[in-house]
Image (cartoon, rainbow, N blue to C red; front, side):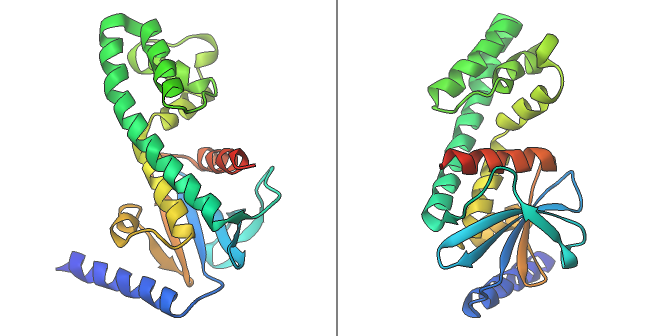
Length: 217
């Protein structure tokens, strides 16, 4: 019963925001593992959205431009990112099975190569970390594979991170479904919608958004 009441309350909140045409409503994205740091997306004029990096208490955020992001983005561009992340989620889910089987039989090196080959075949750019994770998951990495590259690679292979990012982009432009917003624990805060990306740290979240926005240029 509590779950039903919670869902009804959430739908009513979203409905009030939409029906009230709240121009100043923002979407605030947070990482599960990093408190008091956020990415804010806001529509600053019709069909033009700006992304900012924010910190502090949610009621009085201190915000600044994202590094390397100097322009606004259209609704169509953000929808493109939502669709792209949805595709990545399917690719990554498939990669978990394909790479796992290959690594069990062929070990560390083949596992790493299979990872890289799968992502290249799926049309996803490799940043060096993705190839390293095949060895990380199924063997002992060495050299440059140790460190932050592994963290980035694990994120790149996580279909749930991609899916949550897809939902976040959809919420920015107001097309996310109620059920999907429940999955990312979206809540109304100070007239805005705040949602959470699980299994990711803020620096990973910020860098992912910056990289994907820059891909649109």
